[in-house]
Length: 388
Image 1 (cartoon, rainbow, N blue to C red):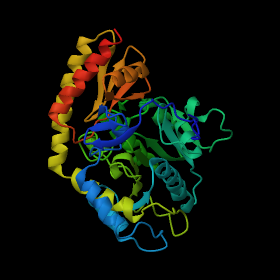
Image 2 (image 1 turned 180 degrees about the vertical axis):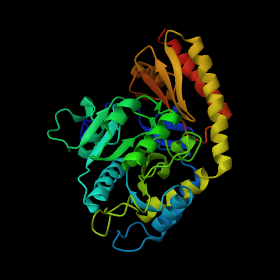
Image 3 (image 1 turned 90 degrees about the vertical axis):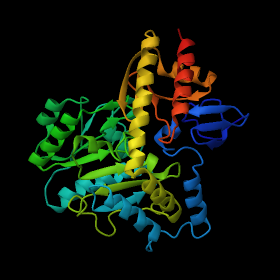
Image 4 (image 1 turned 30 degrees about the horizontal axis):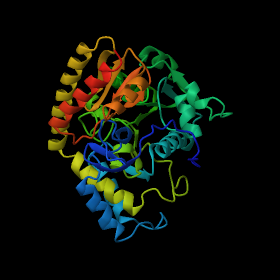
């Protein structure tokens, strides 16, 4: 059968028709235990009843009006985000890529309004900030930028985690430092808390803004609402997406009043961003995930999963090297190609996600049960056995 979909994805030969919690059910009825969660998107699992209710209730009222008018659901989501974070203001987007574009614009506009020629943004190798031309320029990886012609200028790419290189590079032309507290696509690489605090201190010393990309690491994924909270620092601008919509397309840029001061009326916009449907779902996600009791459970389950994964690594020394990550954002450093493990997992009816640096990503729904964790590790054990 000929597909008329642009072939930019290397898709697995599996199609899903429905989901239940941590399970995705294929069109042939096969049940797969989902440790990918749509790449950290389905934070509360498939077909979560609370989210289904929020979506259907809003769908029966109004879907879209555009940002020409006030949108109560958008205001409610923004209020929740501000109440639980460092931020003073929120711009709602449809995706993480859109959030990256605004973060870049906001940082440069901040300095333009001050009349200072500071447009340079420092980023780290291995980063992933989206697929737009601005976002790929920020990431700088050859695989993402090759063949796409002149890119947005002004980005300096530093070795991952090299604080000395950052200190040497940051200066009077630096508008911002942009980084992921835990690199996702780059291989589940957490920046140590001490290093994140050093980044914050360098930004404070030089006046540069700190942009944190919490698209994958945010919304409870690491056991706190946002990963930077572990280090006890706050950014000036933060990108959010994936888990915030629980499966519905949604993103946001959060900022302090000072960092966002240049973004006056007409400087940015979106037709769909902040629509009532997405915001109704996002507000319900926030109410659930921001609950300290919910986050405590994420941490408990993360400890259980990590313990079992450490035993898995020990049982398959020819396949695995180590466990890395934080909370329920974990990676298995592999001695085999991660793509081979993903494929072996299909045979054991378990879904995982490959990443850079030879890592297999495990991003289960935050609502995964203890029994499902045990079942998942058993299936990973059988998948690893296929490669020995």
